[in-house]
Every structure is written in C-alpha cells, then in structure tokens.
Length: 136
Image 1 (spheres, rainbow, N blue to C red):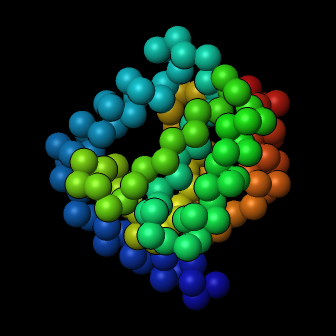
Image 2 (image 1 turned 60 degrees about the horizontal axis):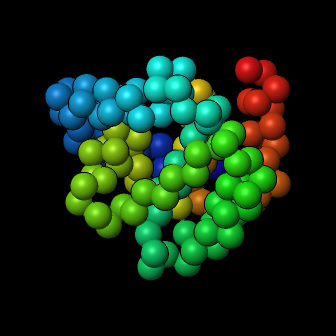
C-alpha cells in the first residue's frame, strides 16, 4: 500500500515536469503511431514497456514481452522504451514514469486502459489483454 502511494507521488512529480507543449506534442505522436483506427495498422493493443537494459526486473520482463508478441501477432504491438535514452524523456513525462519497469497498455485508439509498475507475469498480462480483446 505504501509502495503504491509512493509511486503515485513520484509520478505526480514527474508529470508536473511536462510542459503543456510537450503533453500536446506527445499526445499527437501517440495518436498518430498507436491509434490503429486512424493509421490502419492491424494491432488492437499496444504494450508499452518502460525499462532499462541495466535493471534486473526489466530484464525479467523481456521473456514476457517476447511471449506476448508470439502469442498475439498482429494483435498486440509490443514496444520497449528505454528510459535512459534522451529521446524517450518526453514519453516518460507524459506517462509520469517514476519507477521501472512500468507497463502501459493502450487500446486500439491509443488510450491507456492499464498501468502497472514493477514486474508483472505473462499470465496477468494475458488476462488483461484477453479481456480487452473480447470487449472490443
């Protein structure tokens, strides 16, 4: 419970660093890349994995990311976002990433429907993905 509140507080601080211009630009980018209704890509869900190659929990997520990609080809777009790369910092601020690994799932319109910080099992991800796929 304390961990969740601490993560929420840290995320609020990170989000406050994003300027309105950055939020607008990143929102437009997400809409153009991950709104599959608009861009006609076959995916229905985007799985954004925020992490680092030097983080042990992030490395544990690699297998799960590959499994999701293998289980849902052309349904789930799995995207690793390296938090150490400067070009990704606007995305980190937009999604208020304060802890890694953090997983964000977007629906086919690019809207966030799930967020989790820390390691999450492939089975838990599959349950969330399957539920979203059947609802849409």
